[in-house]
Length: 422
Length: 172
Ligand code: SF4
Image (cartoon, rainbow over all chains, first blue to last red; front, side):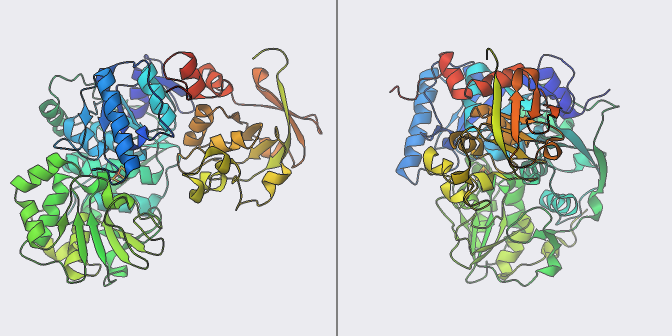
């Protein structure tokens, strides 16, 4: 019986045994990513022996630069840990700063065909790189870095085959909103993305789609490898050992679904839930907004900055509307600066912040007041997620959010992409 | 484990899709462990904590423990639940049962076989549970040895401590 991509990677990482749904696989962890929250005193313990320092990366992201003493202490614990064991991949406040999943993507830490864990729930973001990546608990991270292993209960896999190509103004976020609206949650299931249209989705778009898999309650979310992925990996992480993994021809899926990318249109999720909550923009167009946000591990890529700049170019954010834009990493920030996107975005009246989780988690900036309305291109629109629980959070693509920021109300972005080549 | 290790507990039945918010409500997320243990099912089944006795068993339906990665399993352990049997257990919740040393197993058919108030007798080494009232015995789904050892050994922290991989909580 053939295996899906996830099953094959877990099989390889567990020493080659055949892995099937229902099994518990004990696997070698190739990459363990520790983020700032992992070092909070309630969950962290002093490590006496580390399995392999070269397999660890530390990224401070949720609360950077530290807005509270508690956050500062967690970061200090992380620095001391890195120093004690000589861990080189430390992404502290500074030029290498960023949201962990975005840093992993920028640097090519997620190696195709291997296992990656992080104590943050959006870790399946690394599935864009054909990597079996999963968010686990804080204790699991201590287990992974001291023993070099972790375990997963293997779920069944849903396979999505993409055909065609997205139309201008439609993005990976809209693919996600379509899947979330059409198929809902994927509890205890893996998602595998592939098909003849997959390669037409940019690597950055795949990052968005993989990251959002968490909101589908999926276990592993994984893309097939292609030339674009391998070229990228060789460029950003030269010399790394990779095991690009395709599914077996006779892989067994719980279900196979085909999506024609060319048929999709921009969608919006209504407030309070991401799944089973997508509507056409026409259903909410004209809804006044107080704040617009583009950022997070899902939508802080260079593609996202480019799209926002394209929509904003030569125009002004509506009076009375706040537009916050947060690049996923400082490296993306610098690239967007060089490309001229940041200047365009700022000239239009948006605020560009340093790379951090920030407004996505209602952290240390960009919070919403009572009864305010926000449209966000980030990961979650849960009640109270970005500030006061009475605030209402709509979710859309960066293009939709930018178009809405210009109008001060939820707006279809189509007009900004007319005449673009498909 | 050694000798006759039957766990015997009075059964409390909960339904399908019991989520982690019900066991560990959001407002208690950043409170201490003891306070969290005192909040188990406070909105879902008020007064239950006062009625249940240490060692009692929870019987759940499908997808028990769905939801976030919060340490709800730790709360069940801390409030004295002896063990949990469910038709199926959510992956992340099972992970935390192992992490925090809370006995939780899948047992297809368990909701049919037990009524609230029955006594469940679980013998882990034999992977069976028996209803003391009806005499019916059911097979409990096996957990791989590594996970079972961790679960029965109190979870990840005691294990890593015993192996000298992490410092004791009191140290430093
Ligand atoms: S950006 Fe948002 S979703 Fe992503 S890791 Fe940070 S808080 Fe979580």
